[in-house]
Length: 147
Image (cartoon, rainbow, N blue to C red):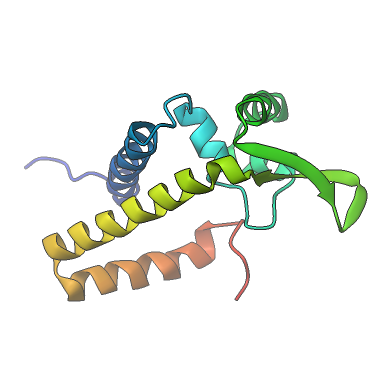
């Protein structure tokens, strides 16, 4: 009997498939200069901006790596650094107006993927999957916003 893949590997395979589709769609829409590493950093930027150190921690990269990625995104006009209203000494990285269209494309592809997976699994299984993963997130995601 073949060994079953660990559930974490199965989740990673599904995540990687979704991530690749999203990045490909964004690139096809004219944002071809965005690398996968840059997209992974940009995807972690909150709606009001995020500090560079938090981006590095969430992406699990060195702060120097995150700085280099954000520098390239900023030069390309996709992000901007702004003062943090909570701490005048700190700066936030936020999505620049140029990148708003890329965000819209990414969200649309996410919705397409949800619909496709729902068609494949059925509405009940998809709802159970979402419920189970949301519950699992309470013990696995140190970056989740408390409800």
